[in-house]
Image (cartoon, rainbow, N blue to C red):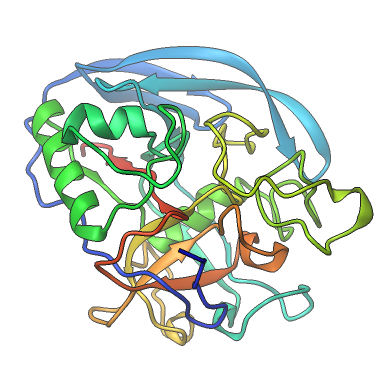
Length: 307
């Protein structure tokens, strides 16, 4: 199926994944990582392991080496602890390719740290919980796609039950905060992208951009951002839990916005392998209708830090 995600409010709908009470099976660990900063004593689920690595990350100022702590859960998915903080959500009027639904640019505070998948959820990891799968582009380490909101909801509930923590989709505000990783430019790489930096439709971008891939790529194919997160630009669209409202920014709360209370479609972020450059910007907003399963739509998970 061709991509039909629209710029103004575009393409694919979903359900909220969550609702399970954590079983509180945790071990206390001290966490230090460039992606998360120093979080002190953070409760780590007992089924997880952790590894601290020196990682080459992309920033608007070029490549840097940062210390990132990655946490691996019971199905082999890696997560990063994202710190609380604040940022400017949306885009300035001067940003090339911006949509009207990215206004007004406004300050948002994320008041609690959260774990976020370092990668889009893969087919191997999804099938470990849900069994047989039918993605459009098969590959164990490719992102899981052709999943609906109800599919993702069922996955999150099953994995929550298995590990005793709450898995869900990120809010739109959490997603953009994590994508930017402190950057204020259109992309976490800076002002623009090339085919060596992200998987998107580079046709017509510039002569040295490279050839489009025409399909999702395996996890880790492109450089991560300063939080240690991969493929926040392109590869597959990523579901967020919020209802979509093109005018929500004008009335969004300053702390931990969760989107409007109702709607007819859900937010999709990040663009995909078939998206043009403007659609994969950090601030770009699209919408998604359920229950259709698309070959350009996937997801990454949030795990809430127990309070």
